[in-house]
Image (cartoon, rainbow, N blue to C red; front, side, top):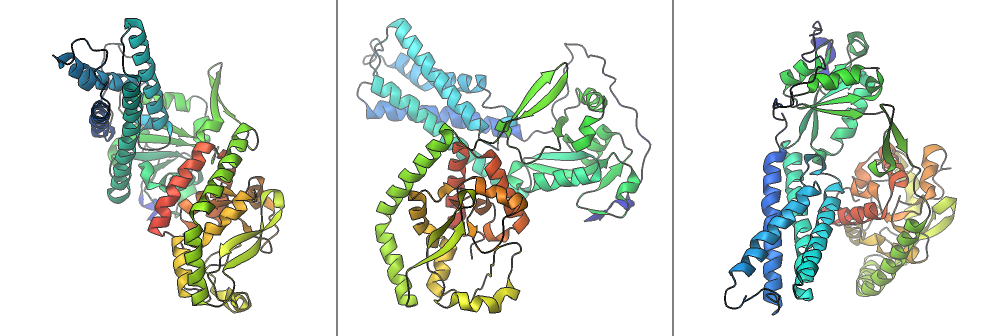
Length: 503
């Protein structure tokens, strides 16, 4: 932590750009941030290799791969040229046309994958049109397998590349954006906390430039150096930044943001705006420019409709299949519990569910039968805040129960609650019915069914504070979607295998 009173105010430097348009032939300076260049080159090679591999597998798997190519058996040169050169290049062109290599979409969020899928659809449509227009008699199985296989492999390679990128960002702090935050100190610190919460995002604040005066920050400890009264572009170059983030009310000052954008033209420095509208996912926000004023239109959360029906159907089907497949696992766990401590195999506790309705949650018992009586003597050893009681070394948990908790196997019986419609696969965790009155923001969690896993679980589980857990649950309620549910389920696998925050 740093004290801002160690920095001196320097007189403002006149802006280097006055908004006069440059020559259309003048070449702007290259971007200061360059991490995306080698990453994009690697994606180009991986995408090309994915399509070649898919075409080769299709050729080897189907005997009619060369159907439609004139004299392909005698001279396969044209066939190989089309399959292993022109088609992969066509894929790259389609992906590029759908902006699947745009640096703004690489490394985070589902937008990159959506654009890859759009590119795959474009390739499929193009191949179909060419075959129809030229009356080429192609093997439908071969072409279909090659196209579908290429899309799957491209997505798989991109997921793998993103995993490597996130590891590099998380461990070494490279391959990201060095940001200078501009605004009042409270607004900048709020943005700092938000962008550093997820190191995989690659956003690294390196300095704060306050707009409300040096005295407002005197003596306050800050995680990065704080400056005031400086030319922002000069400050960015001084601290080695490549991005300016205008926070909160600083973006609302008439003309200031526009003049800053003018100043940055040709500098290679990125400009982003962090409005005071927080915890709202991108799909709910739409920009509607009216007379030069960009209005942010925020849609209501989707808490009903066809998407919710699809979610409920997915929950019931997955829960039913899961219970059938996990019968041997249930029997083994039940036997281990009975051998560890005589008593019931399952533990059922009242929890608060959708719209405040109370239900009894199913779990494998992990504590001794007298655990509830011993709780009163352990309350002062609670290691978490808020409405939950957690101890890393809870003496009420028997050894097998400790393993079940660490591996999250004790939660599997909640598939019964999902099958009965009391819970969902993904949602806020159900809280005990006698631990609070669920007033204020916490009550908003009850707008959706509680889940076996959720954003809270994949973001830290028991290691998070109560306020942070509530914030994540409310974010999920306001921004859930089927794609988001699938993403959380996928992240749950990694969290469970790593046993993060489970005790």
